[in-house]
Image (tube, rainbow, N blue to C red; front, side, top):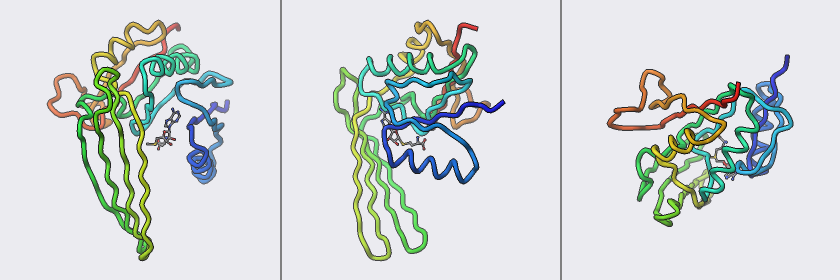
Length: 197
Ligand SMILES: C[S@@+](CC[C@H](N)C(=O)[O-])C[C@H]1O[C@@H](n2cnc3c(N)ncnc32)[C@H](O)[C@@H]1O
């Protein structure tokens, strides 16, 4: 049996990049250019995941619509894994940066956030790449609006959704580090299950 694998993204270049990576590891994947708040898979799957905090929704309606899409995309008993999508610390005025270099190309990355609307729980996320490619300089700045998802509303949201149940959440991708009671939360993962089996 061949498992169905699908990937979705709004960005055409990101889908082409994924296609090249999938070809390198001889994976076959159906890539769909669509919004994570409005998508349908031809065939339901056993596992869905969103990585690297990529739950890009701007409103509560979009968040609801996203979970409804995932519920339709998963078989009963299927799991939905969310990496870095629950904001255990408010995304207020976060600022980090790092630098890396290879083959004469040096990239300085800066990431920062700013409150946008306190009632809508939105914040502006910025990623700035300052590139020095063997003396040629380039600057790429991406800015987008994101709705924060706080822990108690995530729990409430999952528990009141007719198609999901909460399985657990952990720190640092480590099942030996359940989040409950943790002082510091870095890179949290959360797992929910599609009910109805
Ligand atoms: C941080 S990158 C992660 C890329 C890749 N999915 C990964 O896990 O490495 C976030 C991605 O989310 C995509 N994105 C942003 N808003 C989206 C939306 N509403 N629906 C689908 N994809 C979206 C962007 O185009 C971008 O490729």
